[in-house]
Every structure is written in C-alpha cells, then in structure tokens.
Image (cartoon, rainbow over all chains, first blue to last red; front, side, top):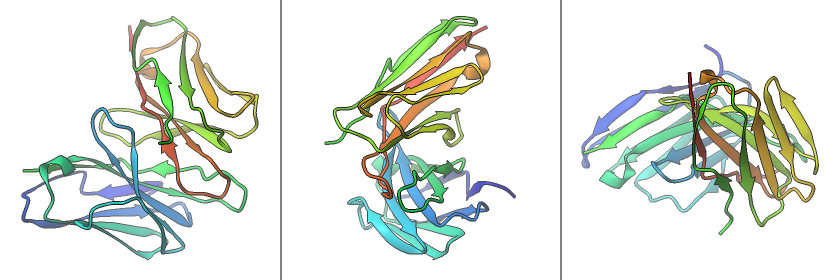
Length: 115
Length: 112
C-alpha cells in the first residue's frame, strides 16, 4: 500500500451507533489530519496530530473523538452523531520542518451518512 | 473570519479552451497550495507556491502567487476532459503551522 488509505469508504450509521473511521499513512510523515467536507462548504479542519500529540482541535463537538496511537495511524471515533454530521471525512498527512510549508496528502475519504 | 474566495464557483467549457481560476484573500499567506479533487476521492496536491510573484508550470497548468502573497491564480491551456474536477486552493498564514484554510472551490467541467 502506498499513500494514505482510509476505511471504510462508505458508512451508514444510526444516531445511537458507535463507529470508528481508520486512516493509515505509508509516507513516513509526522503529522496527520482529519477534515470534514460537506456540500457547498469549504473543507473544515477538525483535528491535527503531530508526532502523536494533538496540536489542533477546531471546536469540534465531543461526539467526535480522535485517537493517534502512532505516527502512521489515526482514528476518528463517532458516537451519537446527528444527521448534519453526514459528510465526506478526509484524512491527510504531511511532513514539514520549521519554516517549510506542510504539503498535505489526502486519503480517498469515508462517505458517512447518519440516519 | 479568514476566508479564501475562489472564482468562478462553476465553469463548464469545451475541450481546447483556456481558463483561469482565482483564489483571493485579504490576508497574507506564507504558502499556498492547489489541489484537484475528483468525485468520490480525496484532493490531490498539484503545486505549492511560497514566494510572492512565483510562477510554476505543470504541463498545461500555470500557477501564480500574487506579489503580496494574498492571492493566486491557476491557468489551464487547452483544457481536456481529464481536467474535470473540483479545484481547491489552501493557504497557511505562518510557516510551521498546521492550520490550513481551504478555499470555496471551483468546479470545472470540460466537455469533449
């Protein structure tokens, strides 16, 4: 496997379910991101992990819970979601040093539908 | 609120035509990137520009970063159906930061 992979690609869940999204990067990068992409809205940054430490939490509701067990894996745990949480959830990774631009490489996304 | 406005929002053109997409902000960016996203897939990085006035070429695509680093443009020459997709710009305000701001997107359709 190369690049950034995400599973599952599609997920339908009820509002009372608990599910997890998984992301794995094979690029040796040191930062990983979760984004939400909804129709007619720009990509919204949700969480950023750098060297397995959360460095960004963009006022995301607590029903979304990220986990980064190591620099190659990132999870998004979902609990008691709302229909408006239906969206494409994208994972990305990047590698950058001080003063260098971080170039993000995205996975294919998980299309989530909350019923 | 920091915004990156892209124009046009939608563009439908015939194969062989030229087009330009714009990405504008009132804020200065330390770097700016362009992505293309196809339906059902994640965005794919096309280019990163860092220096004001910088021009980069990728085959038929020409990217320019404004002198003041507040805006950028993407020009496609002789568009092909394979260029169809959602074009996104994304910027960071300070180097070494992870907080990317994404543009509103330009959806391009090139008809054969």
